[in-house]
Length: 136
Image (cartoon, rainbow, N blue to C red):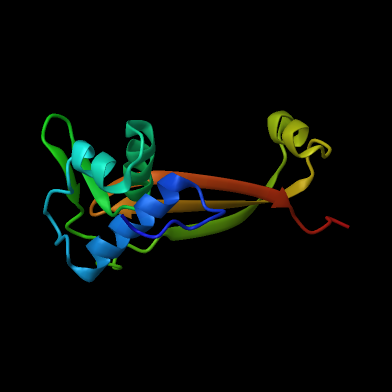
């Protein structure tokens, strides 16, 4: 069992160890990660903790889970070619955004849109808003 890292959530410790194995090649791209039962035994952790660790790896794009087949090290774990695309523009705040940001309707906002892709597919779109420079 790996040395515990005090002050860090248990699932994070497990995710860090699995990430190290993937990045070092101990678990090569496309290979199955150890079964939940094996990880539970190895880390002496609850099933929910192990599942949370695996979910963290999926979020990072290091693991892919196929229903009924298991969780694999992502084949593109070392591929940094899929850089996020970011666009930024100024827009006037509509009623919804004005209420969320506690500004007046029509206030200039900076909208930032980041598109994250996995291969050819869009994985997520992140929109952020902040008050922009004054119109005066």
